[in-house]
Image 1 (cartoon, one colour):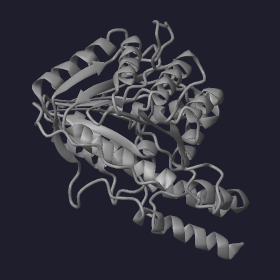
Image 2: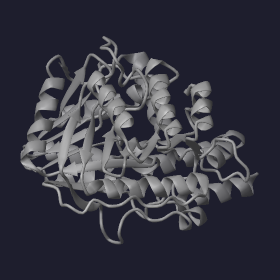
Image 3: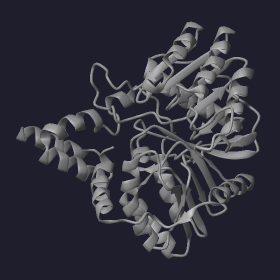
Image 4: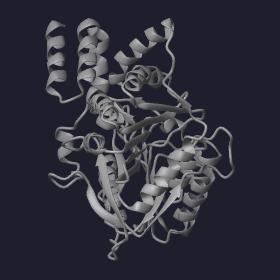
Length: 424
């Protein structure tokens, strides 16, 4: 056992990962090896090695994103509007519907969208659905079976139980991309479930944000989907015809994940904080940053930048709430404005000065920034900056100032959560 402990501790140190994560893994392996070693085998993977060579690199060498353009951007900041837009795109697709999502709910929203996809598959439209395996148990399995029978194709990304065992069950595909005819795409934070979108308003619906875009940038999104599909299924899809006419809205598409040489979205977040002169605003459901991000945010606030962290009073993950609280109090002491909204906030958006606005699937936590497959879109146009500013101002209307107050019991729980958070 001592040899195994030494071997796996050395493996942790060889793998480039945040200091807190490495420290947490080493502690668990050293002090509870009979638990720590199996956990590390199951959850400890961070970057592919041999498997990565079979998956195309999504970023050109030396670049931190794909520069392209869109013809139009539509903001889907309301669950009913998002649902109606999604359904409309499914109904009017002529050739192809390609979707990757983290969750599809066994509820009115999930079933109705699957029914619409099934009808299109019966009509001869290519329907491809890629689901991350982690929450596949939540999916409406009878509706999925009907879609398969109609000719739609469904794949599960990174099955939790598989042979041969790869030790990468912790690496999830968290992207949300829906591509219609290779011409239009919906990207953002919304999964296909009633918490995010639906045919009627709900008082308990989460506040989220996705966008509908069309234009040349969709070609890049399709290449990302095709790479993920090939990795999950082994089948290489034909590229859809690219759009030739340039758009008026500049976009930089940044995918990040275990198949990247670096951590592009994380690198971009740090760069935005360092560049910010007037403001750096971030909205996220889960705020569990590493030390460099915390330091960068604190330094930015001390040099006069309006740094705001917007998150829910209570998210759907208690561990994340407990782990985030010490960071929030530390940053509030440095001058960062912590604003907490009363409803569940699931959007992942960032605003730097009047220069850059970003929206995508990546949370401001170590899981999204270092482990999961994610996608973010970065905008530099004045109209998109203004629209993102308005979204933040609307979100902040009923918010409360300040981080959570800590008592004796909560502080103990927060300490444990901070130790566990880098492992998750």
